[in-house]
Length: 339
View 1 (tube, rainbow, N blue to C red):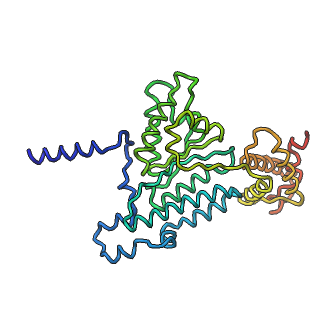
View 2: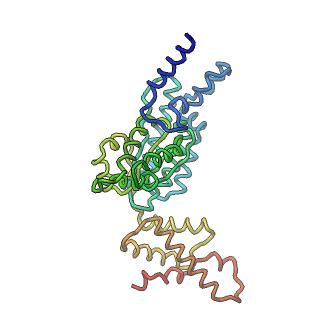
View 3: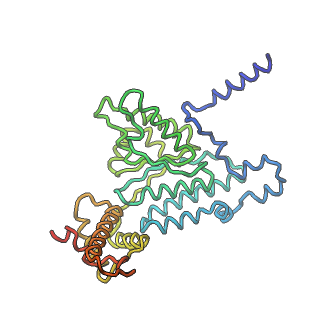
Protein backbone atom coordinates (compact mmCIF):
# COMPACT_ATOMS: atom_id res chain seq x y z
CA UNK A 1 0.00 0.00 0.00
CA UNK A 2 2.80 2.43 0.84
CA UNK A 3 4.43 1.71 -2.53
CA UNK A 4 1.11 2.34 -4.34
CA UNK A 5 0.59 5.58 -2.41
CA UNK A 6 4.05 6.82 -3.33
CA UNK A 7 3.43 6.01 -6.97
CA UNK A 8 0.13 7.93 -7.01
CA UNK A 9 1.80 10.90 -5.32
CA UNK A 10 4.51 10.95 -8.00
CA UNK A 11 1.89 10.89 -10.76
CA UNK A 12 -0.06 13.72 -9.13
CA UNK A 13 3.08 15.81 -8.89
CA UNK A 14 3.84 15.19 -12.55
CA UNK A 15 0.34 16.20 -13.60
CA UNK A 16 0.46 19.38 -11.54
CA UNK A 17 3.65 20.45 -13.34
CA UNK A 18 2.41 19.53 -16.82
CA UNK A 19 1.50 22.28 -19.31
CA UNK A 20 -2.16 23.24 -19.64
CA UNK A 21 -2.16 21.92 -23.17
CA UNK A 22 0.12 19.35 -24.71
CA UNK A 23 0.50 17.71 -28.09
CA UNK A 24 0.84 13.92 -28.27
CA UNK A 25 4.41 12.99 -29.12
CA UNK A 26 5.83 16.30 -27.87
CA UNK A 27 8.36 16.66 -25.09
CA UNK A 28 9.54 19.24 -22.62
CA UNK A 29 12.86 21.00 -22.35
CA UNK A 30 14.68 17.90 -21.15
CA UNK A 31 14.15 16.23 -24.52
CA UNK A 32 16.00 18.99 -26.35
CA UNK A 33 18.74 19.48 -23.83
CA UNK A 34 22.23 20.31 -24.99
CA UNK A 35 23.74 17.00 -26.19
CA UNK A 36 26.93 17.81 -24.29
CA UNK A 37 25.06 18.30 -21.02
CA UNK A 38 22.93 15.18 -21.60
CA UNK A 39 26.05 13.07 -22.14
CA UNK A 40 27.41 14.02 -18.73
CA UNK A 41 25.09 11.47 -17.11
CA UNK A 42 26.67 8.58 -19.03
CA UNK A 43 29.65 6.50 -18.02
CA UNK A 44 32.12 8.63 -20.01
CA UNK A 45 35.18 9.77 -18.03
CA UNK A 46 35.08 13.30 -16.65
CA UNK A 47 38.07 14.37 -18.73
CA UNK A 48 36.23 13.38 -21.95
CA UNK A 49 33.22 15.46 -20.91
CA UNK A 50 35.45 18.42 -20.15
CA UNK A 51 37.00 18.22 -23.59
CA UNK A 52 33.60 17.90 -25.28
CA UNK A 53 32.16 21.06 -23.72
CA UNK A 54 32.81 23.99 -26.12
CA UNK A 55 34.52 27.05 -24.70
CA UNK A 56 34.85 29.22 -27.81
CA UNK A 57 32.54 30.41 -30.53
CA UNK A 58 34.74 28.60 -33.05
CA UNK A 59 34.25 25.29 -31.23
CA UNK A 60 30.47 25.68 -31.22
CA UNK A 61 30.50 26.55 -34.91
CA UNK A 62 32.72 23.55 -35.65
CA UNK A 63 30.35 21.23 -33.79
CA UNK A 64 27.11 22.64 -35.21
CA UNK A 65 28.40 23.59 -38.69
CA UNK A 66 25.84 26.38 -38.90
CA UNK A 67 28.28 28.36 -41.04
CA UNK A 68 27.47 25.85 -43.77
CA UNK A 69 23.79 26.77 -43.47
CA UNK A 70 24.55 30.49 -43.65
CA UNK A 71 26.69 29.90 -46.73
CA UNK A 72 23.78 28.02 -48.33
CA UNK A 73 21.49 30.92 -47.49
CA UNK A 74 23.87 33.31 -49.23
CA UNK A 75 23.98 31.05 -52.28
CA UNK A 76 20.23 30.44 -52.38
CA UNK A 77 19.08 34.02 -51.92
CA UNK A 78 20.18 37.12 -53.78
CA UNK A 79 20.29 40.35 -51.74
CA UNK A 80 18.17 40.47 -48.56
CA UNK A 81 21.14 41.82 -46.60
CA UNK A 82 19.02 43.05 -43.62
CA UNK A 83 17.32 39.66 -43.34
CA UNK A 84 20.59 37.73 -43.49
CA UNK A 85 22.12 40.06 -40.90
CA UNK A 86 19.21 39.44 -38.54
CA UNK A 87 19.48 35.68 -39.00
CA UNK A 88 23.19 35.88 -38.14
CA UNK A 89 22.33 37.92 -35.03
CA UNK A 90 19.85 35.26 -33.90
CA UNK A 91 22.42 32.54 -34.57
CA UNK A 92 24.99 34.49 -32.53
CA UNK A 93 22.56 34.69 -29.60
CA UNK A 94 22.02 30.94 -29.70
CA UNK A 95 25.74 30.19 -29.91
CA UNK A 96 26.52 32.40 -26.89
CA UNK A 97 23.58 30.86 -25.01
CA UNK A 98 25.14 27.45 -25.65
CA UNK A 99 28.49 28.62 -24.28
CA UNK A 100 26.78 30.04 -21.18
CA UNK A 101 25.09 26.69 -20.61
CA UNK A 102 28.51 25.04 -20.64
CA UNK A 103 29.44 27.17 -17.63
CA UNK A 104 26.20 26.37 -15.85
CA UNK A 105 24.94 29.93 -16.26
CA UNK A 106 21.19 29.61 -16.03
CA UNK A 107 19.09 31.85 -18.21
CA UNK A 108 15.58 31.78 -19.57
CA UNK A 109 15.39 29.98 -22.87
CA UNK A 110 15.34 32.59 -25.64
CA UNK A 111 11.98 33.14 -27.30
CA UNK A 112 12.39 32.09 -30.90
CA UNK A 113 8.92 32.58 -32.38
CA UNK A 114 9.16 34.90 -35.39
CA UNK A 115 7.18 36.94 -37.88
CA UNK A 116 8.27 37.28 -41.51
CA UNK A 117 6.63 40.10 -43.43
CA UNK A 118 6.93 40.99 -47.09
CA UNK A 119 5.44 40.52 -50.52
CA UNK A 120 5.24 37.11 -52.23
CA UNK A 121 8.42 35.69 -53.74
CA UNK A 122 10.85 37.44 -51.39
CA UNK A 123 12.35 34.26 -49.89
CA UNK A 124 10.38 33.88 -46.65
CA UNK A 125 9.89 30.12 -46.94
CA UNK A 126 13.53 29.56 -47.93
CA UNK A 127 14.76 31.51 -44.91
CA UNK A 128 12.36 29.57 -42.66
CA UNK A 129 13.85 26.30 -43.94
CA UNK A 130 17.37 27.48 -43.18
CA UNK A 131 16.29 28.79 -39.77
CA UNK A 132 14.88 25.36 -38.90
CA UNK A 133 18.21 23.79 -39.81
CA UNK A 134 20.17 26.28 -37.69
CA UNK A 135 17.93 25.66 -34.67
CA UNK A 136 18.32 21.90 -35.08
CA UNK A 137 22.10 22.00 -35.39
CA UNK A 138 22.36 24.07 -32.23
CA UNK A 139 20.03 21.73 -30.33
CA UNK A 140 17.07 24.08 -29.92
CA UNK A 141 14.67 21.78 -31.78
CA UNK A 142 14.83 17.99 -31.98
CA UNK A 143 14.22 17.38 -35.68
CA UNK A 144 14.72 20.60 -37.60
CA UNK A 145 11.94 19.96 -40.11
CA UNK A 146 9.56 22.62 -41.43
CA UNK A 147 5.79 22.21 -41.61
CA UNK A 148 4.25 24.91 -43.83
CA UNK A 149 0.50 25.49 -43.49
CA UNK A 150 -2.27 28.01 -44.18
CA UNK A 151 -5.61 28.72 -42.54
CA UNK A 152 -7.25 25.79 -44.34
CA UNK A 153 -4.90 23.34 -42.61
CA UNK A 154 -5.80 24.64 -39.13
CA UNK A 155 -9.41 25.84 -39.14
CA UNK A 156 -12.42 23.55 -39.47
CA UNK A 157 -15.76 24.25 -41.09
CA UNK A 158 -18.05 23.17 -38.27
CA UNK A 159 -18.15 22.94 -34.47
CA UNK A 160 -15.61 20.50 -33.09
CA UNK A 161 -13.58 20.33 -36.30
CA UNK A 162 -10.93 22.99 -35.64
CA UNK A 163 -9.30 21.57 -32.51
CA UNK A 164 -8.48 18.15 -34.05
CA UNK A 165 -7.11 19.77 -37.22
CA UNK A 166 -4.92 22.20 -35.29
CA UNK A 167 -3.69 19.47 -32.92
CA UNK A 168 -2.74 17.23 -35.83
CA UNK A 169 -0.70 19.99 -37.48
CA UNK A 170 1.03 20.80 -34.20
CA UNK A 171 1.81 17.14 -33.63
CA UNK A 172 3.51 16.97 -37.04
CA UNK A 173 5.46 20.17 -36.37
CA UNK A 174 6.72 19.28 -32.88
CA UNK A 175 10.48 19.18 -32.72
CA UNK A 176 10.75 21.60 -35.62
CA UNK A 177 9.31 24.79 -37.09
CA UNK A 178 5.67 25.55 -37.92
CA UNK A 179 5.40 28.10 -40.75
CA UNK A 180 1.94 29.69 -41.03
CA UNK A 181 1.62 31.63 -44.28
CA UNK A 182 -0.87 34.52 -44.42
CA UNK A 183 -1.52 34.00 -40.71
CA UNK A 184 -3.94 36.96 -40.53
CA UNK A 185 -6.60 34.84 -42.25
CA UNK A 186 -6.91 32.90 -39.00
CA UNK A 187 -8.77 35.89 -37.56
CA UNK A 188 -12.07 36.92 -39.15
CA UNK A 189 -13.96 39.07 -36.64
CA UNK A 190 -16.65 39.96 -39.18
CA UNK A 191 -17.81 36.33 -39.17
CA UNK A 192 -19.38 35.32 -35.86
CA UNK A 193 -19.41 31.65 -36.86
CA UNK A 194 -15.75 31.56 -37.83
CA UNK A 195 -13.61 29.06 -35.90
CA UNK A 196 -10.24 30.71 -36.49
CA UNK A 197 -10.13 32.13 -32.97
CA UNK A 198 -10.19 28.60 -31.57
CA UNK A 199 -7.08 27.73 -33.58
CA UNK A 200 -5.39 30.92 -32.36
CA UNK A 201 -6.10 30.06 -28.71
CA UNK A 202 -4.61 26.57 -29.11
CA UNK A 203 -1.56 28.03 -30.86
CA UNK A 204 -1.07 30.57 -28.08
CA UNK A 205 -1.02 27.89 -25.39
CA UNK A 206 1.41 25.68 -27.25
CA UNK A 207 3.68 28.61 -28.20
CA UNK A 208 3.97 29.45 -24.50
CA UNK A 209 3.98 26.05 -22.80
CA UNK A 210 5.99 24.10 -25.35
CA UNK A 211 8.21 26.74 -26.87
CA UNK A 212 11.27 24.58 -26.14
CA UNK A 213 10.06 22.00 -28.65
CA UNK A 214 8.39 24.13 -31.31
CA UNK A 215 9.18 27.39 -33.07
CA UNK A 216 6.30 29.15 -34.84
CA UNK A 217 6.90 31.54 -37.74
CA UNK A 218 3.99 33.68 -38.91
CA UNK A 219 4.22 35.17 -42.39
CA UNK A 220 2.29 37.60 -44.55
CA UNK A 221 1.92 41.16 -45.77
CA UNK A 222 3.24 43.81 -43.38
CA UNK A 223 0.04 45.88 -43.03
CA UNK A 224 -2.22 42.86 -42.54
CA UNK A 225 0.12 41.32 -39.97
CA UNK A 226 0.12 44.63 -38.05
CA UNK A 227 -3.69 44.57 -37.94
CA UNK A 228 -3.64 40.92 -36.88
CA UNK A 229 -1.30 41.63 -33.97
CA UNK A 230 -3.39 44.61 -32.82
CA UNK A 231 -6.44 42.38 -32.71
CA UNK A 232 -4.53 39.56 -31.01
CA UNK A 233 -2.15 41.08 -28.44
CA UNK A 234 -1.48 37.66 -26.95
CA UNK A 235 0.02 36.52 -30.22
CA UNK A 236 2.02 39.72 -30.61
CA UNK A 237 3.58 39.31 -27.15
CA UNK A 238 4.87 35.85 -28.06
CA UNK A 239 6.70 36.97 -31.20
CA UNK A 240 10.25 38.00 -30.35
CA UNK A 241 11.73 38.49 -33.81
CA UNK A 242 10.21 40.49 -36.66
CA UNK A 243 11.95 40.27 -40.03
CA UNK A 244 10.84 42.37 -42.99
CA UNK A 245 11.65 41.02 -46.46
CA UNK A 246 12.07 43.86 -48.99
CA UNK A 247 11.15 43.61 -52.65
CA UNK A 248 13.99 42.81 -55.04
CA UNK A 249 15.46 45.47 -57.31
CA UNK A 250 15.62 44.76 -61.04
CA UNK A 251 19.37 43.89 -61.04
CA UNK A 252 18.70 41.38 -58.25
CA UNK A 253 15.76 39.91 -60.16
CA UNK A 254 17.96 39.56 -63.23
CA UNK A 255 20.57 37.69 -61.18
CA UNK A 256 17.84 35.45 -59.76
CA UNK A 257 16.69 34.70 -63.30
CA UNK A 258 20.17 33.75 -64.44
CA UNK A 259 20.57 31.43 -61.45
CA UNK A 260 17.25 29.76 -62.19
CA UNK A 261 18.28 29.17 -65.79
CA UNK A 262 21.67 27.82 -64.77
CA UNK A 263 20.09 25.34 -62.36
CA UNK A 264 18.06 23.94 -65.26
CA UNK A 265 20.98 24.01 -67.71
CA UNK A 266 19.76 26.96 -69.75
CA UNK A 267 21.37 30.30 -70.53
CA UNK A 268 20.52 33.58 -72.19
CA UNK A 269 21.57 33.86 -75.81
CA UNK A 270 23.10 36.98 -77.33
CA UNK A 271 20.98 40.00 -76.43
CA UNK A 272 18.43 37.96 -74.47
CA UNK A 273 19.65 39.11 -71.08
CA UNK A 274 19.09 42.74 -72.04
CA UNK A 275 15.61 41.95 -73.34
CA UNK A 276 14.77 40.14 -70.10
CA UNK A 277 15.96 43.20 -68.18
CA UNK A 278 13.50 45.26 -70.26
CA UNK A 279 10.79 42.70 -69.54
CA UNK A 280 11.34 43.00 -65.78
CA UNK A 281 11.14 46.79 -65.94
CA UNK A 282 7.77 46.51 -67.66
CA UNK A 283 6.50 43.70 -65.43
CA UNK A 284 7.19 45.72 -62.29
CA UNK A 285 4.62 48.24 -63.48
CA UNK A 286 1.94 45.56 -63.75
CA UNK A 287 -0.29 44.39 -60.88
CA UNK A 288 0.31 41.22 -58.86
CA UNK A 289 4.07 41.22 -59.27
CA UNK A 290 5.52 38.49 -57.03
CA UNK A 291 9.27 39.04 -57.16
CA UNK A 292 11.17 35.75 -57.66
CA UNK A 293 7.93 33.87 -58.39
CA UNK A 294 7.16 36.20 -61.28
CA UNK A 295 10.70 35.72 -62.58
CA UNK A 296 10.27 31.95 -62.46
CA UNK A 297 6.92 32.14 -64.26
CA UNK A 298 8.35 34.40 -66.97
CA UNK A 299 11.25 32.00 -67.58
CA UNK A 300 8.88 29.03 -67.72
CA UNK A 301 6.96 30.78 -70.48
CA UNK A 302 10.24 31.57 -72.28
CA UNK A 303 11.16 27.87 -72.12
CA UNK A 304 7.75 27.03 -73.53
CA UNK A 305 8.31 29.35 -76.49
CA UNK A 306 11.80 27.96 -77.02
CA UNK A 307 10.42 24.43 -77.08
CA UNK A 308 7.71 25.41 -79.57
CA UNK A 309 10.29 27.11 -81.77
CA UNK A 310 12.54 24.05 -81.84
CA UNK A 311 9.62 21.66 -82.24
CA UNK A 312 8.41 23.47 -85.36
CA UNK A 313 11.56 22.49 -87.33
CA UNK A 314 11.21 18.71 -87.00
CA UNK A 315 14.00 17.70 -89.37
CA UNK A 316 16.65 19.97 -87.92
CA UNK A 317 19.54 18.35 -86.04
CA UNK A 318 19.58 20.08 -82.67
CA UNK A 319 22.84 20.90 -80.91
CA UNK A 320 23.61 21.28 -77.24
CA UNK A 321 23.57 25.04 -77.74
CA UNK A 322 20.15 24.92 -79.42
CA UNK A 323 18.66 22.99 -76.52
CA UNK A 324 20.10 25.20 -73.77
CA UNK A 325 19.75 28.72 -75.19
CA UNK A 326 16.91 31.16 -74.57
CA UNK A 327 16.87 33.53 -77.52
CA UNK A 328 15.66 37.12 -77.76
CA UNK A 329 12.46 36.09 -79.49
CA UNK A 330 11.58 33.63 -76.72
CA UNK A 331 11.29 36.60 -74.38
CA UNK A 332 10.12 39.34 -76.70
CA UNK A 333 7.09 37.27 -77.70
CA UNK A 334 5.60 38.11 -74.30
CA UNK A 335 2.38 40.11 -74.49
CA UNK A 336 4.06 42.79 -72.36
CA UNK A 337 5.99 43.88 -75.45
CA UNK A 338 2.82 43.96 -77.54
CA UNK A 339 1.27 46.68 -75.38
